[in-house]
Image 1 (tube, rainbow, N blue to C red):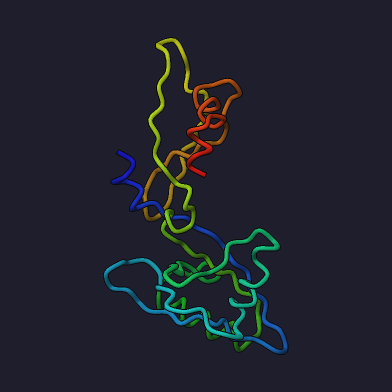
Image 2 (tube, rainbow, N blue to C red):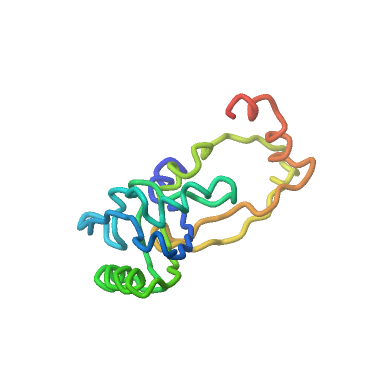
Amino acid sequence: RLEARKAHLQYEFDVEVKPTERASRIGLRLQCDRQEPGGLLVEEVTEDGLVEAHNKTAPKQRLQPVQTGDRLLAVNGLTIANQILGELRESAEKKETVQLHFSREAERSSPQFWEVDLRRQANERWGIKVAAYCTACAGDVLLITRVLPGSVVDRWNRSAACRARR
């Protein structure tokens, strides 16, 4: 069921940082994790770096903050570890805007991620629209894009059981 699969689900997000006269360091301590291929492990978001500045403004702008344990998958489109590190150095020297692409375990990103049992009548539809979404780490995942009013899922969303989980 979902429990076994959700361990592999990843939430991916982008962060853009722009060097200033006062700060040009990215501000990440990274490690190549040989147990988990793909990207570099964020061991620390260091003080006075561009990522820390992003993290301070992220909630106001509804952006995702970078956290210890995230994986840096790409920098300016480059995905190989040595290229990522080289691009970070070059961008800092040239004071260029940097596009960072991260991933995080879905459970850490969305603590409201849960599994529920729903019951429906034989002629009743679930009332959801889904789309396939492909991630590098988890493969194909179904994403709920819409819940139809009055449907089984909509009724559960409005129920006391749903409110008790919040």
